[in-house]
Image 1 (cartoon, one colour):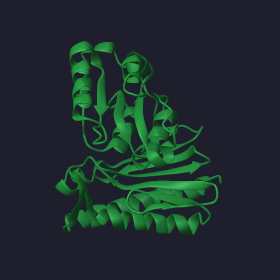
Image 2 (tube, helix red, strand yellow):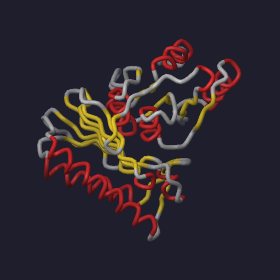
Image 3 (tube, helix red, strand yellow):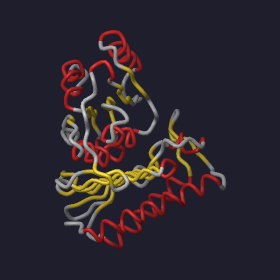
Image 4 (tube, one colour):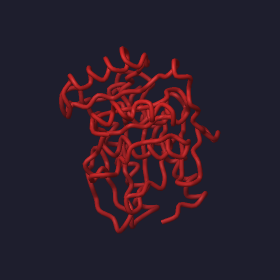
Length: 259
C-alpha cells in the first residue's frame, strides 16, 4: 500500500501529538513495572502503543501490527512495527534520550520509518527511495576523519557480557575509536543518519527498535548488514550501521561477531 503525502503528514502529526502526551504523562507521575533485569515498562508505553495502533487500524485497516508491548497481529501483506517508547529507563528518569519508533513493512521491505524524540524536538522521517529528513531538513551521512570516529553501541542481554567488553577493548586499544551508549537504539540509529555519531552496533536488536531507524540510515546513505535475514522481522538480529568508510573499516572484525 502506498502512503501518500497527505496520509504521511497526518501520521507524523499524530505521532508527534502522542509523543507530547507521553511527556505530559511522565511529568504527571508514572507507575513503572519490571519486565526483566534493567528492562522496565511504564503505563505510558502501553498507552502510546494502543493509541498508535488505534490510529493505524482506522487509517490502514488491512495492515497488521508488531509492537513491543502488544505482540503480533497479522495483516494481509503489510505490517506496522512499533516501539512506543524506546529508552523507557531514560524516559522515566527524565532524561531526553528516548523516542517513539514506527515502521511500515510490506513483504519484508521497510517502506516508511518515523522516529520522534519529544524532549529533543527531533522528528526523523524516511520513505524508501525518497530520502530521509530531520525536522524537514534532508539528511546525508558524511564520512568522518579516521581519528574522529565516534560509535554508538548497545548491549544485549542475549549475549555474554565478555563479548561486549572485548568489543570495547578492540575499539579503544586497536582502533582508537570513541564510543557512546545512550540506551535507545532507535534514536542512536537516527543519530547515525544525522551525523551525531558515525555508526551503531548491537549484537541483538528487536525489529521494533531497529526498522524505522534503519530505513532512515539507508535513505541518508549509510551502509548496514541485512537485518531482515534469518527472520529478523520477528526474531530480531544483530545490527551494524555506519557511514561507508567506518562500516568497511570495522566490518572484518564485526564479521567475527556474527555480522
